[in-house]
Length: 230
Image (cartoon, rainbow, N blue to C red; front, side):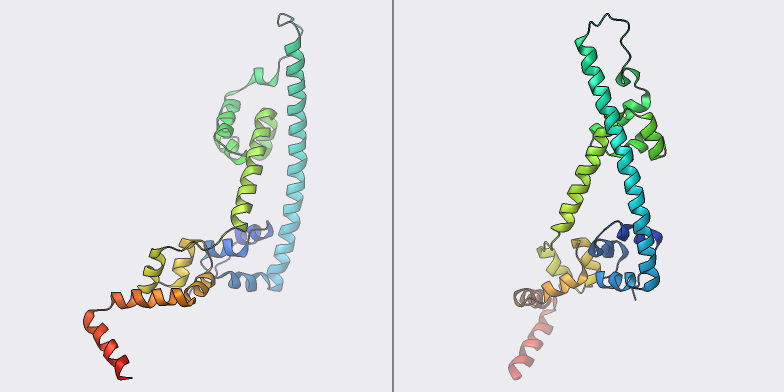
């Protein structure tokens, strides 16, 4: 019997707003099983605490992002001002772009490839968000923030529009006896969605036809004779 095996990440992902159907596929259970689990008083209490902690983290992250964007804006203004002056003026201060380190270059490559803040952390080896915000050029970080925002929008859109997209193999696999819970993760839906789909009259007919084709001919003839006798 397949049962839910929860972990800390499950509560954190749900507190962050991830849909039950998306979580259910990753944990190999029905979304209704998760709904009952999160309704338990002790789990609901954990969920509220985790949600508060996540909101605090998000507020801190937004403050840090605003600071970085302000720094990048100030740097851009300085660059424009310097461009208007005589390039031979030795009193001009260096721009942050003039001081790029190997980590800045690695971060810029990660961002150019569409990466966000986590990609910058991995590319530079700086290990933490705080280190990246302190040591990497704000102009690069702004592009990383924008990439993260675009990725979140894309994920939300996919979650909102997720629907069953059946194909011929789905009916064949079910006709061969494959369980709904095993099919569901491959089609990115809940097993209850598949159950409703297979219950449609036209799909049920396809399923019966596929099952008959899989039977030996002798068995098919006996089935036909028994039906005609009735």
